Length: 112
Length: 113
Image 1 (cartoon, chains in turn red, orange):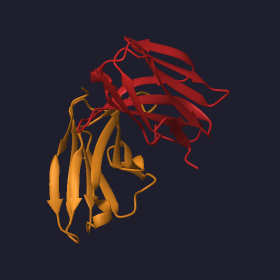
Image 2 (image 1 turned 45 degrees about the horizontal axis):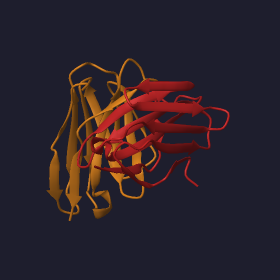
Image 3 (image 1 turned 90 degrees about the horizontal axis):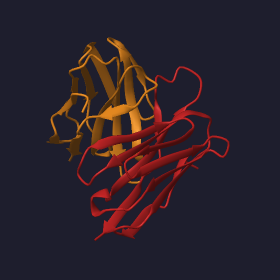
Protein backbone atom coordinates (compact mmCIF):
# COMPACT_ATOMS: atom_id res chain seq x y z
CA UNK A 1 0.00 0.00 0.00
CA UNK A 2 1.38 3.41 -0.96
CA UNK A 3 1.99 5.87 1.84
CA UNK A 4 0.09 8.51 -0.15
CA UNK A 5 -3.11 7.65 -2.00
CA UNK A 6 -5.01 10.02 -4.26
CA UNK A 7 -8.55 9.71 -5.55
CA UNK A 8 -9.86 9.74 -8.11
CA UNK A 9 -7.06 8.80 -10.48
CA UNK A 10 -8.92 10.40 -13.38
CA UNK A 11 -11.54 13.11 -13.27
CA UNK A 12 -13.53 14.66 -16.09
CA UNK A 13 -15.65 17.75 -15.55
CA UNK A 14 -17.59 20.36 -17.45
CA UNK A 15 -16.51 23.97 -17.29
CA UNK A 16 -17.95 25.67 -14.23
CA UNK A 17 -18.22 22.56 -12.07
CA UNK A 18 -16.90 22.34 -8.53
CA UNK A 19 -14.07 19.81 -8.31
CA UNK A 20 -12.64 17.88 -5.36
CA UNK A 21 -9.48 15.80 -5.35
CA UNK A 22 -8.65 13.75 -2.29
CA UNK A 23 -5.39 12.69 -0.69
CA UNK A 24 -5.00 10.20 2.15
CA UNK A 25 -1.74 9.29 3.83
CA UNK A 26 -0.70 6.66 6.32
CA UNK A 27 2.26 8.22 8.14
CA UNK A 28 2.73 11.09 10.53
CA UNK A 29 3.52 14.21 8.59
CA UNK A 30 4.82 17.69 9.20
CA UNK A 31 3.39 19.18 6.02
CA UNK A 32 1.43 18.34 2.89
CA UNK A 33 2.00 19.83 -0.55
CA UNK A 34 -0.30 20.14 -3.54
CA UNK A 35 1.41 20.43 -6.92
CA UNK A 36 0.14 21.01 -10.46
CA UNK A 37 1.65 19.65 -13.66
CA UNK A 38 0.33 20.64 -17.08
CA UNK A 39 0.76 18.21 -20.00
CA UNK A 40 4.36 18.27 -21.13
CA UNK A 41 5.05 20.95 -18.59
CA UNK A 42 6.86 21.56 -15.42
CA UNK A 43 5.66 21.13 -11.87
CA UNK A 44 4.26 24.06 -9.94
CA UNK A 45 3.75 24.24 -6.19
CA UNK A 46 0.17 25.25 -5.36
CA UNK A 47 0.02 24.91 -1.58
CA UNK A 48 1.96 23.77 1.42
CA UNK A 49 -0.11 23.27 4.56
CA UNK A 50 0.16 21.64 7.94
CA UNK A 51 -3.27 22.48 9.34
CA UNK A 52 -6.59 24.04 8.47
CA UNK A 53 -7.26 25.57 5.10
CA UNK A 54 -5.56 27.73 2.48
CA UNK A 55 -7.12 29.56 -0.45
CA UNK A 56 -5.58 31.02 -3.58
CA UNK A 57 -7.96 32.33 -6.20
CA UNK A 58 -10.33 29.50 -7.17
CA UNK A 59 -8.23 26.88 -5.40
CA UNK A 60 -8.83 25.77 -1.82
CA UNK A 61 -6.80 23.18 0.08
CA UNK A 62 -7.83 21.67 3.37
CA UNK A 63 -6.18 19.20 5.69
CA UNK A 64 -7.40 17.10 8.62
CA UNK A 65 -4.35 15.88 10.50
CA UNK A 66 -6.32 13.54 12.78
CA UNK A 67 -7.96 11.79 9.82
CA UNK A 68 -4.76 11.91 7.73
CA UNK A 69 -6.65 13.41 4.81
CA UNK A 70 -6.44 16.45 2.57
CA UNK A 71 -8.64 17.78 -0.20
CA UNK A 72 -7.99 20.15 -3.07
CA UNK A 73 -11.05 22.00 -4.34
CA UNK A 74 -11.39 23.97 -7.55
CA UNK A 75 -14.37 26.28 -7.82
CA UNK A 76 -15.82 27.35 -11.18
CA UNK A 77 -13.49 25.03 -13.08
CA UNK A 78 -12.06 26.10 -16.41
CA UNK A 79 -10.40 24.16 -19.26
CA UNK A 80 -7.07 25.75 -18.30
CA UNK A 81 -7.32 23.85 -14.97
CA UNK A 82 -6.79 20.62 -16.93
CA UNK A 83 -3.61 19.16 -15.48
CA UNK A 84 -2.26 16.48 -13.19
CA UNK A 85 -2.64 17.35 -9.51
CA UNK A 86 -0.13 15.75 -7.19
CA UNK A 87 -0.25 15.39 -3.42
CA UNK A 88 3.01 15.01 -1.49
CA UNK A 89 3.78 14.65 2.20
CA UNK A 90 6.80 15.47 4.29
CA UNK A 91 7.29 12.88 7.00
CA UNK A 92 7.39 14.07 10.57
CA UNK A 93 10.48 13.71 12.72
CA UNK A 94 14.01 12.65 12.01
CA UNK A 95 16.53 14.30 9.75
CA UNK A 96 14.36 14.28 6.67
CA UNK A 97 15.85 17.40 5.04
CA UNK A 98 12.50 18.12 3.47
CA UNK A 99 12.17 14.80 1.63
CA UNK A 100 8.75 14.33 0.09
CA UNK A 101 6.67 11.22 -0.64
CA UNK A 102 4.33 11.67 -3.58
CA UNK A 103 0.95 10.35 -4.58
CA UNK A 104 0.51 9.10 -8.12
CA UNK A 105 -1.47 12.11 -9.21
CA UNK A 106 -5.00 12.85 -10.36
CA UNK A 107 -5.51 13.61 -14.04
CA UNK A 108 -8.12 16.36 -14.38
CA UNK A 109 -9.76 17.20 -17.69
CA UNK A 110 -12.19 20.10 -17.86
CA UNK A 111 -14.28 20.34 -21.02
CA UNK A 112 -15.68 23.64 -22.30
CA UNK B 1 10.30 30.75 -10.84
CA UNK B 2 13.21 30.14 -8.48
CA UNK B 3 15.85 30.42 -11.19
CA UNK B 4 16.25 26.69 -11.80
CA UNK B 5 17.48 25.36 -15.11
CA UNK B 6 18.21 21.81 -16.18
CA UNK B 7 20.43 20.62 -18.99
CA UNK B 8 20.07 18.93 -21.30
CA UNK B 9 16.29 19.10 -21.66
CA UNK B 10 16.19 16.02 -23.85
CA UNK B 11 18.72 13.25 -24.32
CA UNK B 12 18.79 9.92 -26.10
CA UNK B 13 21.63 7.59 -25.23
CA UNK B 14 22.57 3.95 -25.48
CA UNK B 15 22.70 1.33 -22.77
CA UNK B 16 26.04 1.27 -20.99
CA UNK B 17 27.02 4.86 -21.65
CA UNK B 18 27.60 7.38 -18.86
CA UNK B 19 25.19 10.31 -18.64
CA UNK B 20 25.34 13.45 -16.52
CA UNK B 21 22.38 15.73 -15.95
CA UNK B 22 22.89 19.20 -14.58
CA UNK B 23 20.70 21.28 -12.33
CA UNK B 24 21.64 24.93 -11.96
CA UNK B 25 20.13 27.51 -9.63
CA UNK B 26 20.90 31.18 -9.40
CA UNK B 27 19.76 32.03 -5.86
CA UNK B 28 22.17 30.13 -3.57
CA UNK B 29 19.56 27.83 -2.03
CA UNK B 30 21.09 25.16 0.16
CA UNK B 31 18.69 22.25 -0.33
CA UNK B 32 18.44 20.56 -3.73
CA UNK B 33 16.77 17.34 -4.85
CA UNK B 34 16.75 15.00 -7.83
CA UNK B 35 13.53 13.13 -8.65
CA UNK B 36 12.47 10.81 -11.41
CA UNK B 37 8.91 10.62 -12.70
CA UNK B 38 7.52 7.44 -14.23
CA UNK B 39 4.00 6.36 -15.17
CA UNK B 40 2.51 4.28 -12.40
CA UNK B 41 5.11 5.41 -9.86
CA UNK B 42 4.76 9.15 -9.70
CA UNK B 43 7.70 11.18 -8.49
CA UNK B 44 10.42 9.42 -6.51
CA UNK B 45 13.46 10.89 -4.80
CA UNK B 46 16.84 9.78 -6.15
CA UNK B 47 19.32 11.88 -4.17
CA UNK B 48 19.31 15.14 -2.30
CA UNK B 49 21.84 17.68 -1.08
CA UNK B 50 21.87 19.87 1.99
CA UNK B 51 24.97 21.84 1.11
CA UNK B 52 28.18 21.83 -0.87
CA UNK B 53 29.65 18.33 -0.76
CA UNK B 54 26.75 17.19 1.49
CA UNK B 55 24.55 14.66 -0.25
CA UNK B 56 22.48 11.62 0.68
CA UNK B 57 20.47 8.88 -0.95
CA UNK B 58 16.77 8.86 -1.63
CA UNK B 59 14.48 5.92 -2.20
CA UNK B 60 15.66 4.99 -5.73
CA UNK B 61 19.39 5.78 -5.66
CA UNK B 62 20.77 2.53 -7.12
CA UNK B 63 22.61 3.22 -10.37
CA UNK B 64 22.88 6.96 -9.71
CA UNK B 65 25.51 9.19 -8.15
CA UNK B 66 25.50 12.92 -7.45
CA UNK B 67 27.95 15.68 -6.85
CA UNK B 68 27.69 19.20 -5.54
CA UNK B 69 30.97 21.07 -5.68
CA UNK B 70 29.29 24.50 -5.89
CA UNK B 71 26.10 25.78 -4.31
CA UNK B 72 24.53 26.52 -7.66
CA UNK B 73 25.10 23.17 -9.38
CA UNK B 74 23.79 19.72 -8.50
CA UNK B 75 24.86 17.00 -10.93
CA UNK B 76 23.19 13.62 -11.39
CA UNK B 77 25.28 10.90 -13.04
CA UNK B 78 24.21 7.59 -14.45
CA UNK B 79 27.50 5.71 -14.51
CA UNK B 80 26.26 3.10 -17.00
CA UNK B 81 22.80 3.89 -18.27
CA UNK B 82 20.18 1.14 -18.46
CA UNK B 83 16.79 1.08 -20.17
CA UNK B 84 15.10 1.12 -16.74
CA UNK B 85 16.53 4.60 -16.26
CA UNK B 86 14.46 5.96 -19.13
CA UNK B 87 12.44 8.60 -17.34
CA UNK B 88 11.78 12.27 -16.84
CA UNK B 89 14.15 13.75 -14.30
CA UNK B 90 13.26 16.78 -12.22
CA UNK B 91 15.50 18.86 -10.04
CA UNK B 92 13.97 20.82 -7.18
CA UNK B 93 15.08 23.30 -4.56
CA UNK B 94 13.67 24.13 -1.18
CA UNK B 95 13.57 27.84 -0.51
CA UNK B 96 14.61 29.23 2.87
CA UNK B 97 15.26 25.87 4.46
CA UNK B 98 14.19 22.26 3.90
CA UNK B 99 10.76 22.63 5.47
CA UNK B 100 9.26 24.97 2.93
CA UNK B 101 7.81 24.71 -0.53
CA UNK B 102 9.85 23.04 -3.20
CA UNK B 103 10.27 24.60 -6.61
CA UNK B 104 10.93 22.38 -9.59
CA UNK B 105 13.06 22.74 -12.68
CA UNK B 106 11.62 22.17 -16.16
CA UNK B 107 12.70 18.52 -16.32
CA UNK B 108 14.99 16.42 -18.52
CA UNK B 109 13.52 13.67 -20.66
CA UNK B 110 16.08 10.84 -20.89
CA UNK B 111 15.68 7.89 -23.20
CA UNK B 112 18.08 4.94 -22.90
CA UNK B 113 17.96 2.63 -25.89
